[in-house]
Length: 148
Image 1 (spheres, rainbow, N blue to C red):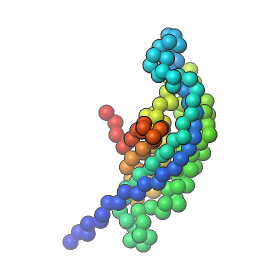
Image 2 (cartoon, helix red, strand yellow):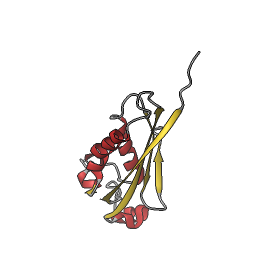
Image 3 (cartoon, helix red, strand yellow):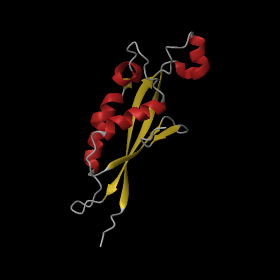
Image 4 (cartoon, helix red, strand yellow):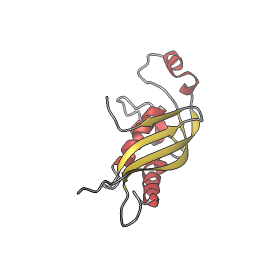
């Protein structure tokens, strides 16, 4: 007889502030950047809200999917310490202009970066389910680790 273990989703919410500039260095002129990114081609900042959702079974010994203190530390060490009060394009290596094609610091790409930073630090008893990044009250992106 097999025992069915419920799958639980656990979300930790954190906030951070960062500056960035949406700019594509391969456009021939500044006008193309303005046409594409509008006023966001200027340096500006956001007060982001980050939601990190993991999933897994409840551990019978602890009664938890994962200790929330451990999840908080993973987020702090691998995301907040890198992004909070930083100029993303200049302070975060993932987004550097290193002579190749830099990653444009859109919310979509920041969300992917956050996924990559967290997924490798989680214990094998849980899976990263979703990263949700609120850029503003009206704009948010979600990433489930999927590819097309």
